[in-house]
Image (tube, rainbow, N blue to C red; front, top):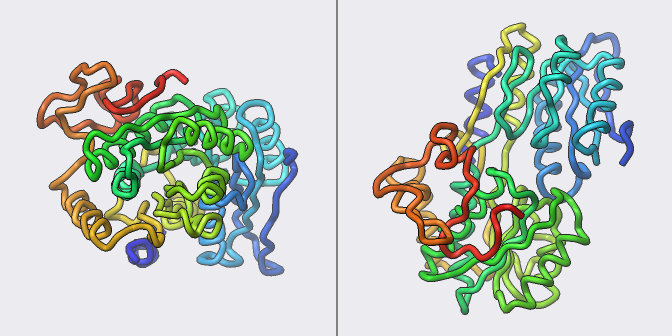
Length: 367
């Protein structure tokens, strides 16, 4: 797979719960390991985002062996709890922290610990000791939306969403555009949970969507609770973050998934070599950062072939889902014909500034 190819390239170039809850991987006796920590907003085995991040940590540990000592802290909330966790890790001699949730690192915190190198997943804060890393998961979410649209008989889909921030809004839009490609005129009704990981709230959201008559549900939250509900009522489900097919094998369609390890390995090696510099990194399908999880039994051969066609066009730049004309819920033209949205530039018409939902989404962009 592409992610293995990327890992080989990185290696060849040489680039490559309570606050105290977590686990540490020991190193060989007598070594002086470089200490790196990962902080998760949910459990390390959530079946979603944090599990994908923990897979990245394990990849780094495997590739560097006794040269590093890694640990993770899970169920850490933004704000005071995160700050206390960083203070504890600093006291233990950790030199690098992968802060794996939006809003974790603040300028004040970074300035308080100038000797710690922070890598934050999602956001735009870049400082002397802070880098941001994420990527074009909207591309694979679009492809998963194609699977969802093709599986829908009614054209009424649901989507369980976390917080009304640009990241989630663009993912919702990508899912909707993909569904509309395979099911013209499809609508996507959203329910906000106001949490990244809350299985009870996610299940309630799925129940609420189902009661409105949707016949396929996707998600931009971290647990498999949505899928487990879909399995119980016999409707298709599109996951997110990780391959969670085991939680709902009959309902499973696919999911956009992350491969964090190669990037994290590259950055740890740079930190160890003294060549680490702050920056903004945005991975994509081509470099193996994101891909689609294996398909479930409900995805037809015809749909698989169509998705493969569009994936290839995304890879070679011949197609991009956020190319105009694009209209918002009110029918206002938001992206002019032929214009492609950029990641950071263009205010509300950039991916990182998006605060509007495309035509066909039912629900408020403000939560």
